[in-house]
Structure formats: C-alpha cells, structure tokens
Length: 123
Image 1 (cartoon, rainbow, N blue to C red):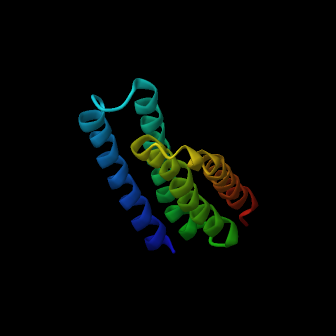
Image 2: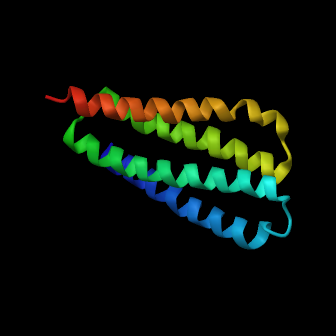
C-alpha cells in the first residue's frame, strides 16, 4: 500500500500544481475574485492532503494496519469530494455540489484522526 498511496499522493500533488498554475494564469481574468478564492482553497487543500498521502505511504511501512489504510483512503475521498466539488463549483457554476464539499472536509479530518490513532496506538 505504501507505493499506492505514494503514487496517488504524487499524482494529486502534480494535479494540484497544475490547477494552481491554471487558476493563476488562465482564470484570474475570467473568475470573480470570490470564485477565484474558492478555486485557490480547493488547490490548497488538495496540495496539503497530497502531502498527507505521502505521510500515509511512510506510515504504512512504520505502523501497518487498518487505521493507516483508512487514513489514506479518507484523504483520497476528501480530495475528490472537497477539492473536486469546489473546482466544479467555480468552473461550471454547479452550486448544487456545495452540499458535497463538507463531506469531503469531514473525510479529510477523519483521515488525520486515523493517522494520529495509528501513530499513538502503534506497538
């Protein structure tokens, strides 16, 4: 699982940098400042949790178990739901997807809780 989470984390980091560059160069003139801010929040949380996935990849080798694996998959779900819904909101105006954003945020928080649990409960 370490290579899986590391690879997914690296891909999300790559996509986050690409999205940040896209937002900075292509969207600055096209989006209202409040929507550009929402896009930048999506990028920020994607990049933070991509690094979280790299930490999970390391943790899998140190404290293997269900909690670490759950943390990784919760980070993946959180990125897709939180950042993904914000990207769609800003790019497509899909306001109805705003209901999904908090679910992604909760997944991210649960991922960090699982990672902490894995560290503190390791033998």
